[in-house]
Length: 166
Image 1 (cartoon, one colour):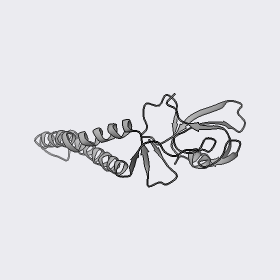
Image 2 (cartoon, one colour; image 1 turned 60 degrees about the horizontal axis):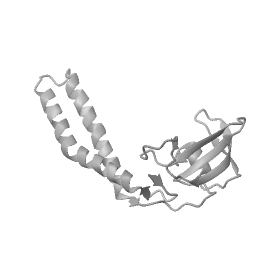
Image 3 (tube, rainbow, N blue to C red; image 1 turned 30 degrees about the vertical axis):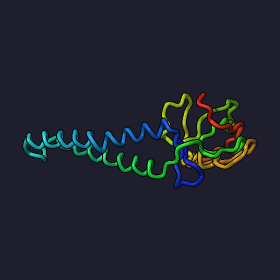
Image 4 (cartoon, rainbow, N blue to C red; image 1 turned 120 degrees about the vertical axis):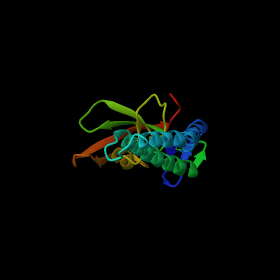
């Protein structure tokens, strides 16, 4: 799955779409039934203030409902197929090779959404500090981005090619 420069569209392979749709169907169907049964069983144990099982089940329910909302939004904005890509320009769905300032080693990763699973290489989000700094840049360019500690780091783009599933 990749997100284009248009944040309103999420490009999915058919496999990723089917996987996410299956997860949504399970969570919104049998998953909800299972968690409701856990909550009911915990309620029957008595005092809810000191009932760890009840509180754990309610927390699990909250996480599940959040995931249902997330999946619903992803699938609502999804387009199945390949995102438009231009070789040599960094964008979602591209395999990117970079070299960080002060380091001779090259690092290769896939620029894609975190929902993309099964990739044999590291996946960086286009919304991460590094991903947003290099998105739209061309091979040969050097850009700086801010690290979580507030410092800035330069990175040179060595290669940007469409992801081939390595």
